[in-house]
Length: 68
Image 1 (cartoon, rainbow, N blue to C red):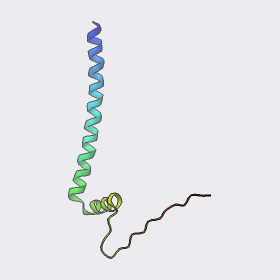
Image 2: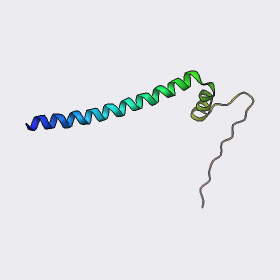
Image 3: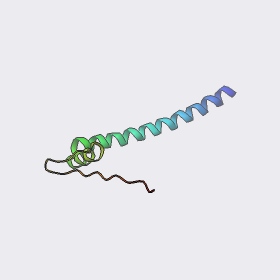
Image 4: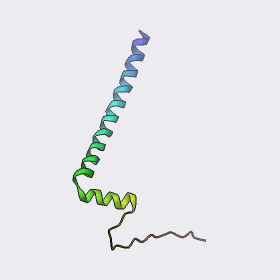
């Protein structure tokens, strides 16, 4: 009897984990779709994550100074 309860608890945990992974999978599929079908999204992410710029643009990087 004890083993049945333990198995049910394990099954419940695994079902919760599965639901979380399915949710993550949906979000990743949406993001992939945006990369493949939305040029503005692709450009925004390239600029943000890779620091890319268009020809003729100047990239400025601001560095915060420590207060002394």
